[in-house]
Image (cartoon, rainbow, N blue to C red; front, side, top):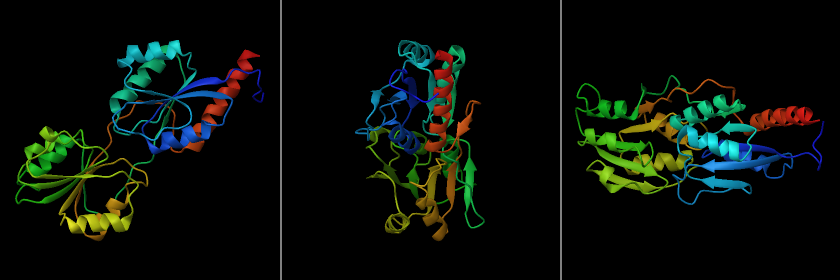
Length: 268
């Protein structure tokens, strides 16, 4: 049954903070069949906000999220958080399971190395820092390290203080968390190949450390590292809860429309 003015819009919660979440919100801005709310953790200052309801801040764990979902009569949840926001994804999966709510994971595909890349995959930032500290790894000589792991996750690299770091982040990091020889570069993606090449050459970078976030916005740094024959320490994604998943906002929108139709038929 098509949506009509007499049909109640489907309340939807989008757990956001990614390009994919923003794309889905744009698709929903003029969709009368839905009443979406975008939830942001509040980590990034001055985020770009869509023209839908927005809440900023945590929920207070699984119980807090369940209470919020009940209070707002949410009928579907889309987890479009960052691939490394593992705690939020786990909370969403538990809350939705407890409340029998449909949950969809909207997540961009991970990056994969080519034959020309020199990747060293590690399971965590601590493991990446250990590889830089270990004389059997990259700790033999001081290196110039390009860190693109986020401003809140720099402390592990204090374990490898012999290196010089270039840290790029959207917002400024806490100075007390930084290794002793760190230069901070404030920038927001997307980044292009020529600019990434120029940054690495200007700072005489020897090695890139990044997280496997996927997507196109920050991929050019990997292309630049490949051109310059730089090794890359790649922090792989943490495990995600098992649930249906899609990789584009358009597919998430189609999933929502399916649930909206089913909900409308139930109400008839």
